[in-house]
Image (cartoon, rainbow over all chains, first blue to last red):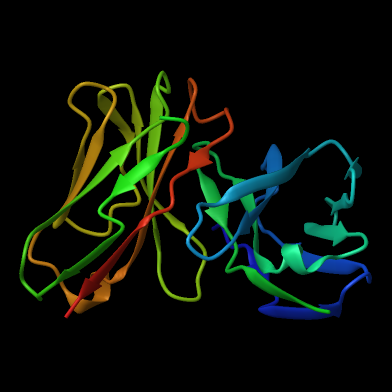
Length: 110
Length: 114
């Protein structure tokens, strides 16, 4: 079966790095995604990583993928108050449909 | 429009009533998806349209839920005999050609069943 799990909550101080972790179960996933959800707004795709990659960096965002452990992480460098949101990891299932984790609420304190 | 739009933004109904939720995808996008997000959870897939046809409806929870996309653009999610457990945010997304393309999400419709 498919199950994507995340920790519920993370609190950091402005300027620190944030690391949000995710575990997934479908080893056949070709892509893994990170989405951001702010109140009243739609889900926004932040970044994605192809399953044959270990790392992807995009400005302040770094995605690490450990396929052996089925572990995905999102690191946000120099976290800002505007980064406060709920972050979802998602995998693509065999039917190319997205399976989301439960989301991690990131709170950034000034 | 520039993005995916959904109407209404909020819908309050009584148990047992029928509701329709509308999604306007990005112009030219042939693939359209419906998800349901319950409080404190991630979105769960409901149904995927490729053009006018439902390519995958495996996520619909039961036969009270139905969706259409008659002209391959606007889609309507229909819920019959609503139950309190149907209360959630219903999200629509569209992608350019297929499920391999990036999905762009609308802001959602918050459905509350009293």
